[in-house]
Length: 308
Length: 256
Image (cartoon, rainbow over all chains, first blue to last red; front, side, top):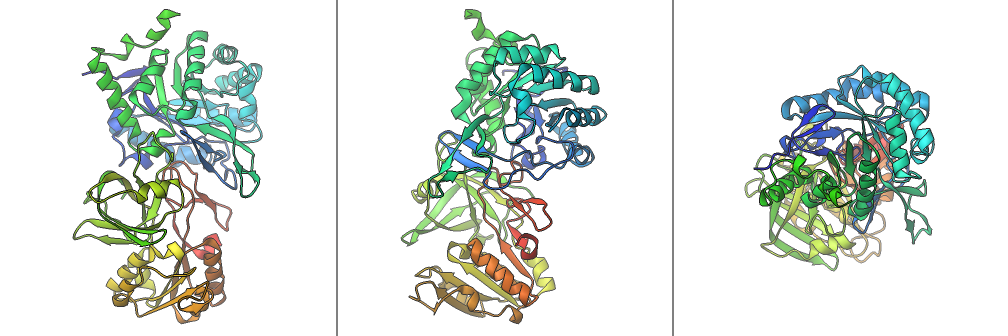
């Protein structure tokens, strides 16, 4: 039987499957629906220092093989997370071994730094720095486009945060390899990509954009080949672990990312189509590995790059 | 109790009206029994097929003895068209029960005289509501509004004191709004599900007579369990609440 155990930043995970931020709440929501013993970690809903309501108006829109969302980082704030939701994540960790990842967004460098400093003192395992949310007008995304701006905010957060730091990149980055290098140089311990792709939809009956912000974030299988290309570029650009995500819905999808060199993968929108998507993907990965005589992920991680 | 995800089997699928279907299924999970006002998400197509999201549909009737759940739904878009193709013996992905529903046990401790108010396909969950109220010794008065032709009204006789119908066209019953059929002052509580504009009206009329009013909201949702925050509604206090998890049933004064 194939062994899916994965080491990410010193944490031994059940599998390389991590629940992607924004799609699995703080994990507990899915506890009775999914087999957590097959899940490596949970990245909680994106936090901001003070918490916020999120966006008004339409928040969800289905597209071919995908979903556009405009949630706008609705969250209870870092302190509430530390007091309440983090404890739930740590209980899950105790029961099933799922690594607890706090996803942190921000509206300014000061907010990022203060939030990161608070999380640094908490029981969270890994901080995933979200410099890529397309759904908040100020900040977030702004840092996700320019490598220089990203490097700057990562450096400030690095100084304030002792926890392992994974930086989540936007596909809107001007240049993925340069962005990855800037983030690595600034002290990131790992990179995750991609966040959602900036997208748009128009309501014909109303003759206006579906979303109040006009643009929103597309995820789901529609973006997967592009996300895979960016993960390939990221792996080639840096020496730190790369966690791949973007439309992964099957074991084969996940294995593509692993063969491109990803250390682990995240599963997001697929959880909506099948609440058991994460465990199903892990099972399908193991089945493929068994059928091909592959015992561990190390044997195939990055193997597709040999042709490079 | 959180939701479960099962393969459910279709026992019967009836055409009730042009665009209205009654789907009766075997729900295999004995540990997760639904109650009035809760819903399931239904998916009669693959995880990799359109539409991307499963469809949330309320419980019309739940029979614990036979583990069967009935969904009364309207065929509107791609998802419900695919559901409508389900045939007896087919199985499909059913996840739930979800949401808070109407807490009949606690409601009947506080209130005795109920008006159950529904509009269009919003009448669907009110059947289970009326059944549970009747079982708790509080047979409600039922007031339903339809555009033209009422449907699924026969079974209310044994579980309601009174059934009154209004239609927009005047084809059947009272020609006008459902909210004109009753005076909230006559009731301890009014339970409502229907189009938003109708629920807002019902809530306003209840507020004028100081009658508690509970409404069941509807929103597009992705996860159905409070994880994605796609179905957040803004409460009067400015706080965001998930229709799927904190609702779909809310005290009307909280949301309107």
